[in-house]
Image 1 (cartoon, rainbow, N blue to C red):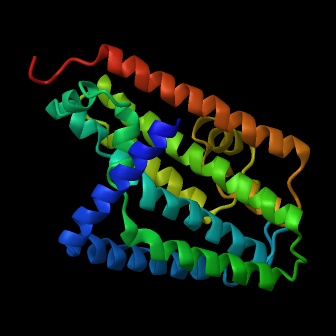
Image 2 (cartoon, rainbow, N blue to C red):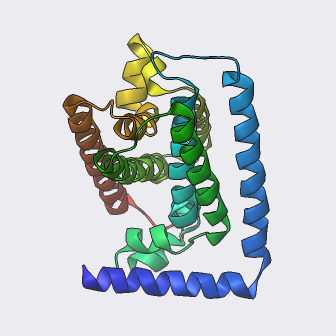
Image 3 (tube, rainbow, N blue to C red):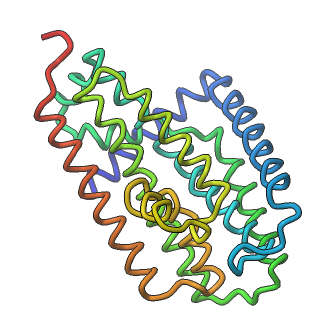
Length: 263
């Protein structure tokens, strides 16, 4: 564990050194991510500006939800997004060989080798939206709810990573995962705008159990506003454990089945 932490630290240092050498690698993502954030914010206002209530959630709770999804997505963008999305290309080109032959965990290296500090401002913007949502809702924020919220954000960030990894691992078995990525983007875009509590029937089943993007911001928001039940908490922990197991197992199985592009 200690060696892994040291290895991750060195990867991040190398990445930051590279980014500061090529400044566009920092400022480019900064402007792109900021623009994307503003577009999402305007879309939120267009959708919810005149809606007073969604199943008990008022404007403040919806703001917390939007800010939370943005926060988790921003953590993803800063830490592991650019590493994970490179997996299909590494498999197809045979570059993965360079990772499998090194005496370090290949998935660990891929995950943390392309951190993106250009997305850090999104973390601050997201926190501001969450803070404004708390104020707008008029709730009395307790330490218990705040701690529960942070725990759920951590769990949902892991779930976010699991989903990204799982879909990219299909590249071991198919030539292209582009269609899967399109499904992922569509599901994320929908669940970023619609709280999980608004889903019913087949939609609830699909976005809670199959592609569980519907819980990613919903459960942390419920924790913060004091509406997360013990059943909801257990569900959140269990769904993360299940998808973590599936994603890591699928990665391991894919590595065993992997044949170098040069062979």
